[in-house]
Image (cartoon, rainbow, N blue to C red; front, side, top):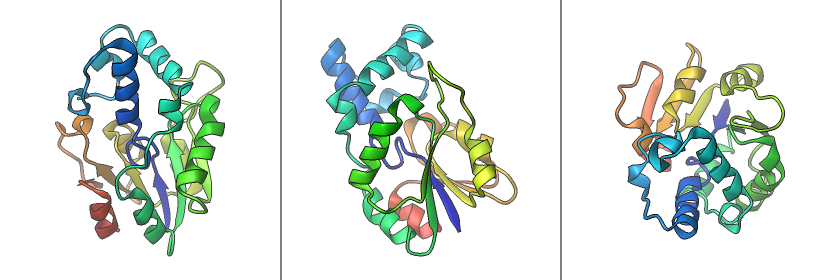
Amino acid sequence: MKIGIDLDEVLADFLPAFIEYHNDTYGTSLVREQFHSYRFWETLGGTREEAIQKVYDFHKTLYFKNMKPVLDSQESVDILKQNNDLVVVTSRQDDVAKVTREWITQHFPNVFSEIYFTNHYSQNGSSTTKKQICNSVGVDILIEDSLEYALECLNSKRRILLLDCPWNRSYELPQGIYRVNSWKDIIDSI
């Protein structure tokens, strides 16, 4: 079975690293539970462009390079890779592809057969969608934290496991999308 796994908030603890960076840099006191949307400008204030620029600035820091893996993700993907083909499907930009590949190699060595970037919110190059990637490579199960991407990728042959996060809690899930609370739940669901 081919399993597509999102990177940020599923494998990589992006938001805690970003919050630490933002609090240290801008003197804020943000916490994860404040992010009821992954559209950062809705939590940070300011414009969409300003929030995107803050993320681009974050990409250039050690906070980004040194972010931690999500709890239990390393052990869990080691279990999943035994009988499945695992691929990363991330909305990260091509500009951070090199550091992203290095981070994955460091924390998840020899686990993923491929890493796909959609180049979302990019200032350079063209982008694609997670749906296009999942369809073209034949993803059977997608593990995701974004309800928006989960809905985009849902079809009658693909199951979506939605990792519970503050930004996806206030929605009722359609058939085919299943809420999971942890990597243990993910393993139990597959």
